[in-house]
Structure formats: C-alpha cells, structure tokens
Length: 243
Image 1 (cartoon, rainbow, N blue to C red):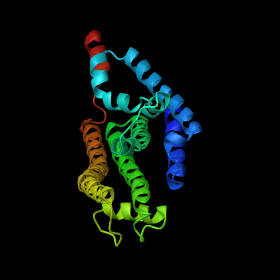
Image 2: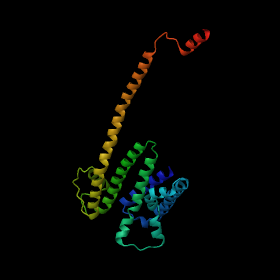
Image 3: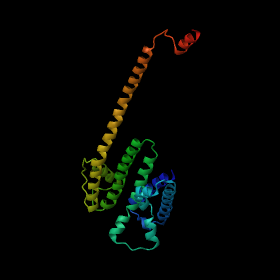
Image 4: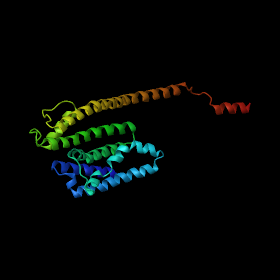
C-alpha cells in the first residue's frame, strides 16, 4: 500500500510539473521525494527477494522493476553528470515509466483471482499508456502544433489513437509520430485481449446455471431411487441377529 500511495503521488507530481513545463532536475523537492520513493521501492524488492525460495528467478522476473527503481536523476544531479541533449530527453521519461509500471504491477497483485489480476494489469497499463503519452505529446507539441492548446486536447488525441479511430490532430514532431505508432500498436494488441476476457466471463456465467441444474437433477434422481418403506442396513442386521 505504501508503494501504491507513493506511485500515485509521483504521478500527480509529474503531471503538475510537466504541464507547467518544469524540469525534474531543476526541482530539489521532487528529487528528494523521488529519492525516498526509489528507496522504498528498492527496500520492497530486497525484502521480497529475501523471502523468495527461488532468488535468481525472482531477480530475472523483476529485473525491469529493479532498473527503473534506481534513482537515476538523483545520481545525475549529485555527481553533475553531463548528458547529451538526446540522453537528457530520454531521462525525462524514466519517472513516468516507473510510476505507470508500479501502478499496474501493484494493482494487479492486489487481485486474488489470476485471470482478474491479468485483466486489471491490462486495463491499468492501457490507461497509463494513454495518460503518459498525452503528457509527452503535450510537452512536445503544444509549442509547434496549434491544435494542441491544452493537456485535454492531447489526452483526447491519445484516447482516439489507442482505439485506432483517428483524430483531427496530426502530430508534427518526430516524438508525436512515434507515440502515434506506439499507441496504435498497443490498441491492436490490448483490445483483442479485452474481448477474450469478456467472452470467457460471459461463458462462465452461462455455464454456472447449467451446472446448478445438473446438480439438482442428480439429487432428484438419487432421492427417487430410494424406495419408501425399504428396510435399512441397521434393520436388516437386527433381523439377522434375532434369527
């Protein structure tokens, strides 16, 4: 729950700074919060690793979570590491990836049913993709694209892009075009998965009444096969003993 709360706070903070065009490296308060949040994530990974019966398998399964939990921005700011504009541009997306991944991971883990857990992860992953893609699209397009005048227009574009419906807003930058391809690909992959889960849920609901009717018919057949007045096993035993 602490990891989930920290992820939600991080998402809200990133949203505020992104819309206000504030760099993460220029915000000391955000860097402090991110450091302690990453420390919480790493502690959670270490504790789970200690109690895991297969430690190497656990590391292999959670290597992505481990990599994004490292406070890279704090390391860069602490040692004054010089980065090229391209690397600095990519590093802006690390906190977004971390927050979205943790939110999907924790929400899926809270579900006891495995099928429902996977369904929850797919839904949250799709929502996180739309949300963060809209943030990135807004940052990159609102200066050069007259149709992107607010974050809500960018969110509208992301929603229509992932559903492969299309939107009147055309991306101008290279980042916007790449995001359009990624969201369309995710929509082609995720929505058939939703269809499969809904179909299985409907079939399960339809199968349950049939099983109940079959159980009731078996019970009625068993009751009908018992003849009223027939001697029981105890009565037969008492008759033999008296003889």
